[in-house]
Length: 422
Ligand code: SAH
Ligand code: SF4
Image (cartoon, rainbow, N blue to C red; front, side):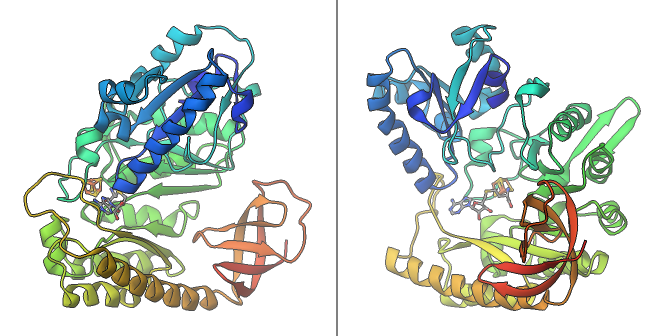
């Protein structure tokens, strides 16, 4: 989406006062995300009053769910609503408003409006004018859109549609354009990204092939991916993961629950033992790899015993980090109303957070003494391949994007302390 503006002469800004257009990119995966989007749109009423020439675009999944008619009725000052399924039309919409003009415009971008982990950035025009575009060191590239699984609690298939794999040449061209513009790490995105498969006249391209090819792009030092699904791991993946050091030693592998009963009710398609088996295979391929996860607490029917299974999975899987969410009802299906009160949900959430924190701290401490390769994001800090943030003892004098080696000397909260070696 940003590319559609940039190629018409816009610059990104986080200063609303200087902006000519505002894009609110919305999420609806939990009720809270949708509520946040709505209140952000509401706040733009005053901006529009003071900038009557300014344009407001609402995009993404909440826009898809709530609908253009509804949103425009509620917020008459909004110019366009572009739902997640219409992501390909963004460029045409921007064309209608701003044509091909190369006047300098300012487009506000804040972490809320264009979240860095946004999976819906359009790739319809990724050939960015290189001079105008400086890529972040770590750049996201969409490999697939939508999802064809049917987890009971999830709204993604409804608002994004079924899984659609993008052609490998488009993915690789976007990654190459971003690498040419300064990216050193490419993060391949998709709801079940490791299910990636694409038929070409020269044969089928698998997820493992896509990882290898992305890692071979000039300038790319690391490749990450998010999120794989436990159902789609295969021997090819583990081989590439083991043999290619550019594939980050890190897998974010959402599990949702540690209880087989709840996993079944959620229709996740795997058991606790199968999940643990995949984690073991990741570690077998790369013993230094870190695994993180997502949990949902308070899914309808979750008993204290089920919840304890989730708690015990934290240590059993050795995860380094977890996003923990309270169940939020997003679908109308019967039996999916939450049956825990807010207080009970909070109580389970805080017990789980405490367990995750305790284990994360043990895992961070185990890294002390290791020599790690760090991709600098600033002159004195960066990330290891296993995705731990390292703060160095001194400025390196090197530019962000450089790879350095550091000895891990300690832990400070959620980050590692490191001594620069080379
Ligand atoms: N495709 C990924 C998850 C994408 S949604 C996967 O299946 O692994 C990101 C995370 O949001 C999920 O992992 C889940 O933990 C959380 N989430 C999704 N729907 C939710 C809901 N209705 N209530 C609470 N959390 C939810
Ligand atoms: Fe939602 Fe992920 Fe399940 Fe797809 S796999 S339905 S995106 S939770």
